[in-house]
Image (cartoon, rainbow, N blue to C red; front, side, top):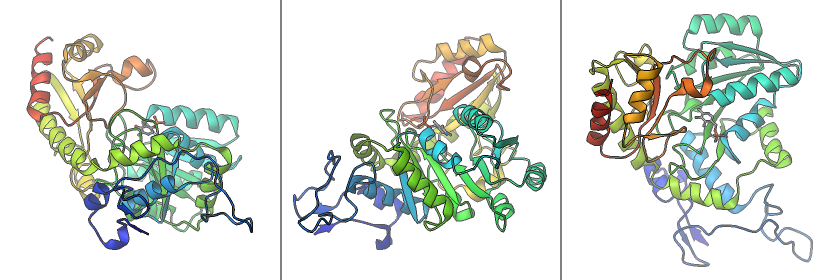
Length: 388
Ligand SMILES: *Cc1c(COP(=O)(O)O)cnc(C)c1O
């Protein structure tokens, strides 16, 4: 007997998160779940599993299921699957496209995704078409010409913060065999729920804000239809290809999720305040953040995002590579590191990482905004910008 919260209690997501994975367990009296370290589970005298569904941890275990059900509830989806990393989740989804098939992906998205898509598609005779999904009519044209099996969007995109119209692109996919998947890592499900706009799948790198403490790798995919062909493929792929999240990581993720609502709230406030301050700064040419009125898809972002606009932004320094690296080097609170969605603010010079030919401007700094006091973040940039 246990008393745990579920979405069927009609609670606000913030309340579900505050109790993530927990609830009173009559067997132990514990209010937080135990870490399930067992890899294998016993059968009774009649050779039935003692606990239905518990056979071997690569298939599933109670801790995964608690976490997956919570994440599915946050997305308004029917089910979720955890993976060993965001990329493992992406790989499982992409492998649903058969050789000879076509994948239409948004251009200028997370570098790791683009790299994987290019290599995987080239090796497996899959046609990969990359197009700017924030230009709806051009994307519509690509869609009609290519008739893709899978459409891949990233909203908002990393590092350009472009916002694609999920509703309109879902309408395009509707009535065709195309599966629409949205990588909503930079938003979190508290800000963006792609399934509610008609996407078939939503994925997150749980490494980022879902866990939020820069101390584990994880990924999650959720579906609007747990009996669809693509979902059957993805859940079999998780089980058979074995890219499961470890139990310790799952437990840490659940613990991180307990504070997701608070972290997102603070990050949103810090991000919009910093974005406005930087936009007004003479040493900053422009700020890419969907919460700003100057953002080219601001009204679309407002119609899709709730509670704020997330913790990711990019800024263009008034100068070149040297000035941009100088500003990054002069920051005290912002750590110079890749990744996003952690409690600590991070700064990254993407051009140094991706190099010539990547399309990344040399004066672009990508920022992940943490939960520090907002005034300290603004002051840190004010002092760093005086060095150029
Ligand atoms: C980090 C990231 C990924 C990859 O996730 P990992 O957990 O690092 O494998 C995918 N998409 C986006 C938008 C990301 O930021």
